[in-house]
Length: 250
Image 1 (cartoon, one colour):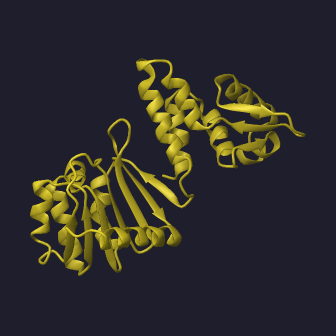
Image 2 (image 1 turned 180 degrees about the horizontal axis):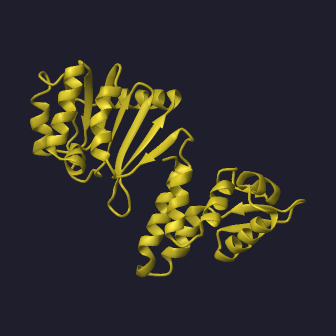
Image 3 (image 1 turned 60 degrees about the horizontal axis):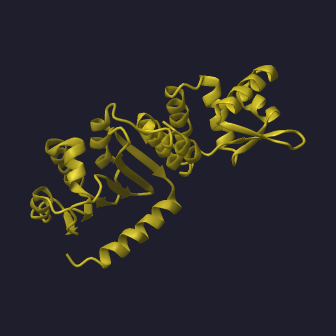
């Protein structure tokens, strides 16, 4: 699912109509500004329909009008909306947290898509078959165990080894699982460096080809995957990982 659609669906969960969520995301993705004519063309809604939705978004605090000629409409940043809910008290903490998550996602590259928990095991086990060269793993191995379990991870490694693809792993935890896995590095075509860390968040990333996969849990504890297919971003992450690897002596 592309990020725009994910944000739109999430906004609908919090009470916006389909049209309101759609217009808000369109404005958000056009550098935060759009006029009614542009929105009408983008949505195929009637002119009256667009203005009705804009009025509702203004009333709900998601959009503000700017006095230009013609009038342009600005999307209120999601992090600002998050702060508005945060000050309302503990009852609205979940809502504030969700908007904070959406705010971080709204700035990711357009080549990024998001995968949710449905059939995530199948998504994970299909990764080794997409690797044409070499794979980097960065993050907490405890996260891998927590998200997928040891049996799924064993299947993943078996598929990668069978394909003959090597891996380098920088692990930010000190769990028994990580040390046991590192002891099998030669057999499993891998080299591991462990940076002992007891408070590292439960998340991890894979880098292969021109693809970056970031596995994490959202504010509600649901496992999500951000998939970015972009050569420039992949190259930047590769440089980052190589520097981390070279500076780690473990």
